Length: 193
Ligand SMILES: Cc1cc2nc3c(=O)[nH]c(=O)nc-3n(C[C@H](O)[C@H](O)[C@H](O)COP(=O)(O)O)c2cc1C
Image (cartoon, rainbow, N blue to C red):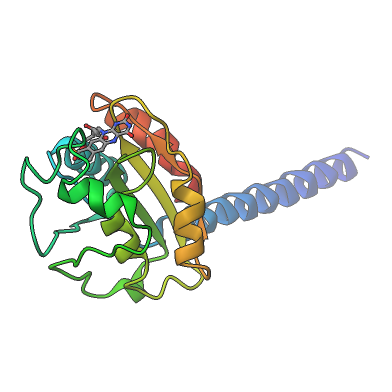
């Protein structure tokens, strides 16, 4: 009888060990799959605020960083939103405006997830972001907009960007203040990693 009980205990311990081992392995595979995603943080910043947030985000999540540089840099006069004839006012007034970009992401095809950062201009993404969205094949990729602003939210940025890159999966994204912490950015971004 004692021998039977001993044998039964042995079997339970053995099966239990295999179960725990299998589960642990599964967990590891999942963690690996998560970290295998290639992530890019691409941003446009006219006066440095979005650049600061983009830099923090890329560090927080270990992503590559790419600055979207205008072929013709924006001067202070260009950014004067009180002047209806300033370059930014004229561009933002014309939905078909596509300011040229000076540089190119070397190999966009290798990325699975692309965070796209910009300042809010007239309640949406600047026209140069529209140029960016039309410059690559985003098929099957997850695109997440993020922005800084004087206070406005994302407006229709996400849905406009989705229309410009219909094969991508574009989230509505989020507006951050310049002082957002790396920790908060990481928590927000982890959903897509
Ligand atoms: C042409 C222009 C239009 C702007 N429109 C808005 C706006 O609609 N709402 C808002 O809250 N801030 C607006 N801002 C402020 C910027 O979004 C804000 O200063 C942003 O953080 C600047 O980011 P950057 O330094 O990366 O360019 C505007 C700024 C400019 C130059």
